[in-house]
Image (cartoon, rainbow, N blue to C red; front, side, top):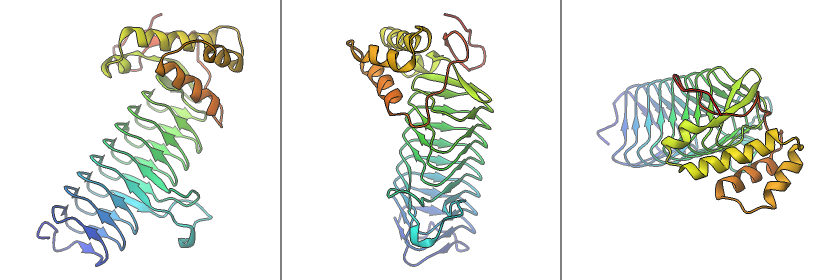
Length: 275
């Protein structure tokens, strides 16, 4: 316990692994659990009931598990913030506890939260995502795995962000962003396939081609979305195309429309746009 700064305030009921480091003026409230190898910097506040797994880094001024910004919140319906392993929370990150679902707010493993990022109550964030500076997730947003949300992005409540998505800076997301695509604009539209991200993630050419053909049918065939998805479902498909089909079938808010002719492109600087 000698890794805890003497100015830190730690509730006696907090369950803190002996390897945990806690910096000056940080507060750890009652009923929290902080796992092996976590590093808590200065002026951090970890609110009651928050659970952290192993090897998480929480930088200066972050607040984890705070009361949600919801007028219906009361301690009686409070749900915890549950965090997995190997996440980084940079300066000023703010993540709310749950209030309206049984599971509360959930964060997976290996995510990188840049400075001043905010996630509202009852969000579910998967694994290995990068969430950009000053971006905000309203309540009940779900983010899949391996996605990149750029800076100053605003995501509407109950929206679903698929796997391997790139969202460009300053985008306004009001409908679901399907897997393997780029979301851009205000309001956002599907701007293309996240081909650079897919190559970096090791998706082979034949899989990238199958993804592109699936989206061309959905967005460009002249069929309505339901007809195109049903047609894809009736044919043999790769695992990735099956994921796309299920995403459209399960969408509650509706899936974002395409901005123009769908291309294999990237929102990253220097990338060429083309068919």
